Length: 174
Image (cartoon, rainbow, N blue to C red; front, top):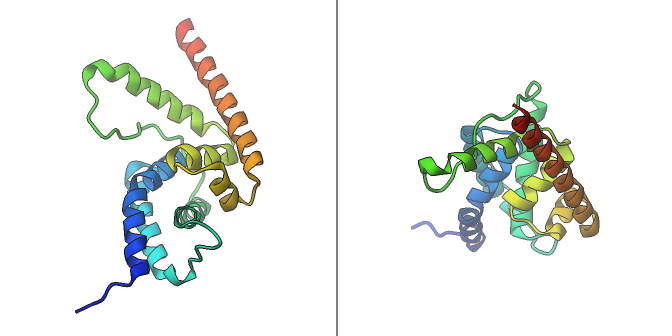
């Protein structure tokens, strides 16, 4: 009989809860759906191999897993040629009915607008909204103060709002 380490059980339980958030993080970081799923699995594999390195006094398990995800994303991007903009929509939990076509188009516009932001802005937005991380957790991960994270989020959201307004103006002119 194989005994399961309590740390492994906790890691598996937390990972189950964070799988969707990690996949969304990778998607907002510019990876396609299949790559996001593969990278999420890789985060779990790496976290299991390095579970003894986790120190709950330094960071929450969520922050540690997102640090692994962030480092993995950086390494993958470094090994690839310049990325092309993401052109697919984020998956919904339920299929979209026909009457939600407008919402799907808006979601696509949002993804395209996010991809035009600076890398750091995209990363902060992805950690906050896809990862569900607090400003403190993002700050821990990126080596920033929580207040600075708040400022970055505010500026990124403001830029995103402007870009979406520009696109709306362009579509009204057509």
